[in-house]
Image (cartoon, rainbow, N blue to C red):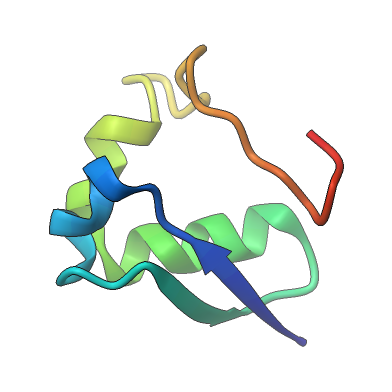
Length: 65
């Protein structure tokens, strides 16, 4: 399955200016792993040192937070 990930404006400098990215994955975790593998600069902005999402990061699947 291919998923479209929308990138917020402040983080686009870490995705070569892309506002959306198509990634494969059947789960949110798989897509997030793919995103961080393809754009490793995002990792420190999205994840804490222990690998959990930072408290201010919101992930949405369709309309669900």
